[in-house]
Image 1 (spheres, helix red, strand yellow):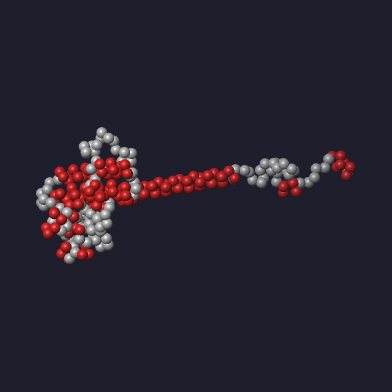
Image 2 (cartoon, one colour; image 1 turned 180 degrees about the horizontal axis):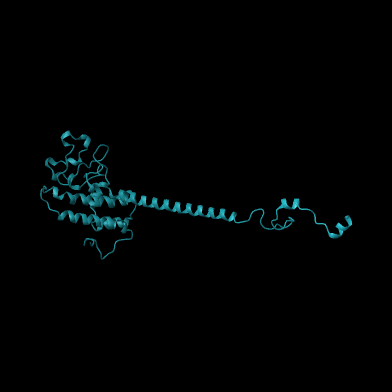
Length: 244
């Protein structure tokens, strides 16, 4: 499936964009599939939840890859902003204290809610009443995106769109690199062990003490020394006649 038309192909993306391209494409395809789904048995606002949630996930992915894990360069990050692959306004809010987990700029706009307040998802869980613990924002489906201890669940949507994909990708790459390093060490160990066995075999190739001839030893061949001790001396015939 080709990339969206808004991805400006007249100007190719900067080097390093391929590190995030596959994930952005997958999210774009997911968004199109969810939009095509039937909205039967869904409230009008609930049918728009995937749009907000996938948009949040794409923005969070690029934000974390640049700011948290330093896996993409600034040119790649700025390219995503210019091409509107991510929500620049939402990312700008994440940089401010108290808004690090904000689900959407919509939920903090007082004009969108009665009495000029903000969404229930901006209220920390620890400050909610018992009947409000399970409340979600009707526009985004956010369970709670306030900041700080006890503010809300880490996965603000409670589904796959609330996952931090940059963390998933970095962890997967670390496992792959760890497996490669382990295999490299095992291969080195096998090679070292093989060399040691070859050296041991070469030491046993030489003959034993009874084989061969040693210079200066006065010993020739492999005659059994025990036999030489019991042999009678050889007496010339002339000596025998003299003795008789």
